[in-house]
Length: 231
Image (tube, one colour):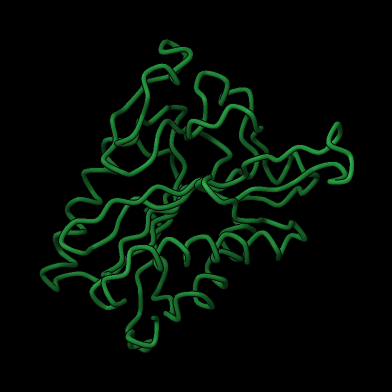
C-alpha cells in the first residue's frame, strides 16, 4: 500500500507546547485537510495534549457517559464512542491523503495500529489488536489463570475522512490520571480496564515518546519528517 507514496516528499510534524483546546484543534484540522486536498499544504502529524475533556464519536451511546459534569463533553466527527483526552496523554492528529494509499481506509487503520504497537515495543510493552475492539490492548496477569488475567486499553484510535483526506487519529496513555476515565465507559467497553506507560512501570516522558513515535511512523508509513514546528 505505502509503495504508492513518494517517500522523498516530507510530512510536516507539529508539536504543541501548551494544552490545546479541543474545538481549536478541530478547526485547525479542518482547514489543514482542505489545504492538503487543494495541494497548498503538506500532509501533517500534530502532537499535542488537551485539557481534561470527553469526546463523543459518531457511535456514542448517551448511556456510556456516566458523569456529564466531570469534564466538558464535545461531539466529534470521528468514528467511535466516548473517549477521554487530558494531560499526560499524547494525542496525535494525523492528516494523510488516502488517495495516495489506494483509498483503503481499513489498511490505514491497520497501519495506525501497527504504528502504536511498534512504539510500545520500544518500551518493552506488548501491545495487541483485539477482534471487535478498537484500539491497542495489553494483558496483565497470567492467561492460564482467568482470575488474575485482565486486558487493559492503552491507546485509542478514531478516524474521520473527508474527500479521502484522513484526520483525527490516535491517543496514547503515557501518564494521565487514570481516574479521569471513570466518567465514561471508554469506547463502550466496560469489562476491561485502562492503563498507561506509567501504570505499567515505564517512566518515559512525553518528549521521549515523541521521539519514538517519529521513528516508528517513518517505519510504518515510509515518510520522512520535515522540520518539526513547535506551536
